[in-house]
Amino acid sequence: LLVRYNDHPISVGWFRFFSLLVGILWLKFLSFLKVINPTLATFVLAMIQIVKDVKYLALILVMVILAFGDMFHILIRIDETACPVNPDPNNDENPFCKTGLSYLDVYAQILGNFDYGSFLGHPTTIILFIVMTLFGTIIYLNIL
Image 1 (cartoon, helix red, strand yellow):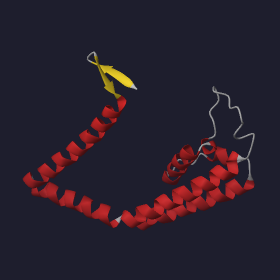
Image 2: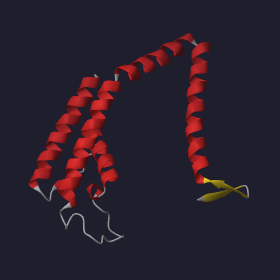
Image 3: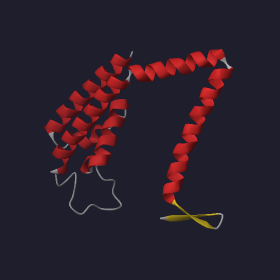
Image 4: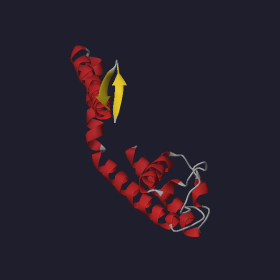
């Protein structure tokens, strides 16, 4: 897919690369400021240490998101009313009908977006929703 920029065709992949590059440049600028200002250096070094300490917790969080995303996807996908074979393009589809959206919706719900309307069709999904929110709470309380 090509995009025209100043009358030059550029691949969309380059824009994705440039967006990542801009983020990396901002991080390099932050490390440059760390050298200039000792107070800022303390905060930057603290952030680096926090990221190192949270890596195992993040691994557990990813595993919980994948597990609950798969469980909800499997349970809700078989329901014809929640996930019709030929969905209406004008109607919002249940996020658990697609695997990728299932993971994203579980992540959003663990962060606090409690839209439980997707789970009302089956009692098992309601129980899984409660267990998932408990797991999310335990994971985030461990950060403190």
